[in-house]
Amino acid sequence: MKYLITGGAGFIGSAAVRHLVAAGHSVLNIDKLTYAGDLRTLADVAGAPGYQFFHADIADTKAMSQAFTDFAPDVVLHLAAESHVDRSIDGPGAFIETNIRGTFVLLDAALQYWKNLSGKPRDHFRFLNVSTDEVYGALGATGSFCETTPYQPNSPYAASKASADHLTRAWCETFDLPTIITNCSNNYGPFQNGEKFLPTIIRNALMDRAIPIYGRGENVRDWLYVDDHVSALLCIAQNGKIGEKYNVGGNAEVSNLDLANRICAILDEVLPRADGKSYANQMAFTKDRPGHDFRYAIDASKIKTELGWCPVLSFEQGMRKMVMWYLDNQDWWRDGANDIKRLGLGQKA
Image 1 (cartoon, rainbow, N blue to C red):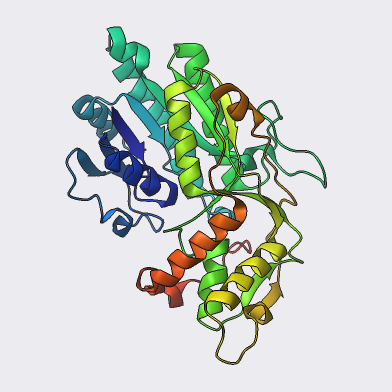
Image 2 (image 1 turned 90 degrees about the vertical axis):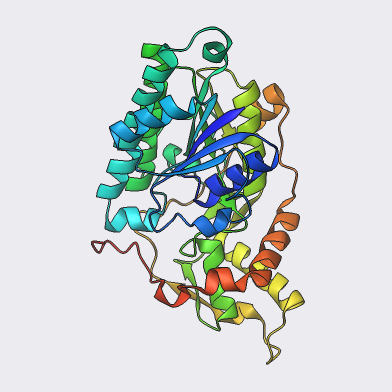
């Protein structure tokens, strides 16, 4: 199979690339290499047969058209996106350009390519738009998001991803392009950008800095190990129904404060502080993010019932695996760690 992956130097994208190349598939990785793209995440597959890297912007119409023509993919995994909520608050323009206009350009290039296919290549082609549970808005103390939950995005990031979802659905309904939309919960695992919450906890703990907890730490998220997410995407690409949406979750709903405490407890066990104190003592409550959604929770029963997918790793297994990776790969995340600053206070980027 030939997979065109956008954002393949990013966190989730690189995990997908590594998995597919290891399985012997041909992969074209298209990435603009913004702050979130890092080719070090692909060092193990950079010279592998069947792997190609194309340094390009998905909003570049000519480049995307050429990529489809030259590579002739069977499946598109559209993962390229500006994805940091705090950055979207400070500078939403980049999110509009990449997540909305970029998705439009990619859909249009895919449509022109697909229309010229025939036979099995045309029948088997799929375009997956990989989205987020944040498009649904915020939940109260109970309930969960299902595929029919109305969209109510609250951040510029979520609004831009909701727009991309709507464009993807429209290209299927209007032009018959065989698209599928996935909405996942928060991912975690190796190679995640240092600005994100979990890497920040581990980095600040090990660098003896304050571990920032927004507000009172009561905001709740569902957590999904990145490799489990990749397995879900490939399951959907192979067996999902055209025009459908699939929610992908990790069955691991936890508050930010509880999550930080759990990570600190693992660190206390495997790498105790020299002074004998818990890393949890470094936690410090800080000014909350504007419009911070209280709770997300994914109902992933559809993908389990219809496609037979469920996550392999438990929350405890995944968290320990992630912490051990960051401990074993400190050279990777310490590079540039001193330059990471608090974002998302409404100050223009």
